[in-house]
Structure formats: C-alpha cells, structure tokens
Length: 270
Image (cartoon, rainbow, N blue to C red):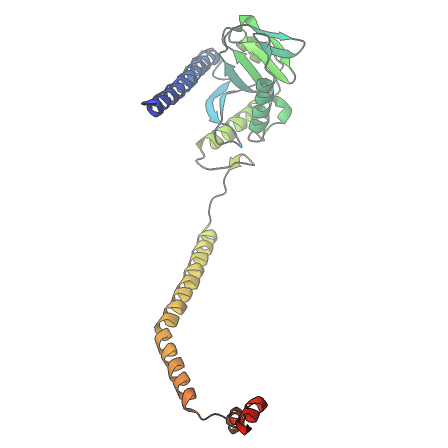
C-alpha cells in the first residue's frame, strides 16, 4: 500500500516522542520534589548541620543521592519523592494508590549503605535512610529499616532523635563526603577516591608501552624482510629445479624402464 512504510515510521516516532515526554514530566516532578526538600533542609541550624545535595551514588555511575544531612543526631541519606495519588504506610508497608512500593524502600536502604562506606568516621548504624514525600499528607513511620516522612515533618524527624555524633566526628564526616564529592574519579566498588598515580606507576606504564612497540616493530620488520627476500628465494628454487632436471637419471632406473613387459615380448616373438 502506498505510504505504508512512511506511516509506520511516523507512528514509531510519535510513540517515541510520547515516551520521552512522559519521562521528561517524571524528571520535572522529581526536580520539584528535590527543591522542596532542600528548602526545608535549609531551615536546619547551620552551625550544627551540614547538608549535601545531588551526590553521585557511591558504587554506581548512573544514579545520584538526593540529599545527605549530617548533624548531631546522625547522617541522614534522604531520597525525595514527589508522587501522585495517595501514599499510605501501614504495618511497615509502603503503598502508592494501593500498589506496593517495596522496590523504592529497598533502593533507599541500599543508598544509605553505599554512603556509609564513604563516611568511615562513624558506625554504619548512624547512617540512616529516609524517604521524604512532598506533601505526603503528613505520612510518618518506618518501612523496614527506612524512615518515611513528608516535607512537613522532615525537620522534626531529623532533630528529635538523641545525639550520637560529637562535633569532631561530624566535621570529619563532612570532610569525607566533601572529598568524595570533589573527587573526579572514584573506585566504584569501594566508593573511595582513587589512589594517586605515582612516578613509578608512570614509568611502569611507559616501559610497558615501549616493550609493546618494540614487539610490534620487530614483527613488522620480520614480515618486511621475508617479503623482500621472497623473490630471491623463489628464483633460487626455480634454478634448483632446473639444475635437477639436467642431472642424469640413475642407471638402474633407466635399465628398468627399457625392460619390456613379458606380454609385449611374446607378441614380438610371434
């Protein structure tokens, strides 16, 4: 049918555009949620709390940590959510519009464990995962090991806990996070800044590069020599074959060829 392929291509493009549009809306909602949470975190006492935003997730290249708040009551790894519909938390089970959201809970817990590998100045039990919902109708409680709250009760959640960090420990934790944030290259599995390259490492790499180039050059040189000598070798083979053709055959072989078959001898006798 005329125009069928073009029509199919147009449909595919419209479907792709629709998917991109939906993804853009989700990202925009997420950005709104992160800004709302950041606005609440700015109300924390600056002399007691330090807040980091939009950190790279330790151990992952394509994920981020929305917020990390470090204060006397602990290190809080906060994941902002700007979900639509009803959000409920009953019996430690998080639901959105009646659907289970356990994957989101597990993701928040995994994120806190990853940050704990960076904040080595304190125990991992003081690094706490938080799911914070924009609005959220005052949702509050726990889903497994994850604390759940909304932007309206976030500050109460952070400040109401008993102090567990000294000022010196808090400062060291902030230094660790800041060093991680500033580091351009990370050892992803350990989530720590990569080791600086020493002069011996550099010379080792140079030596390996020179050795590899030498092997390559020797290989190319051997091929070139073989190609250059190939005509001479072929010529010598031709000459040798010609010389061998002029050499008289062994007398025994000639004598044997001159002998006739018995049947032939009988025919001649007749």
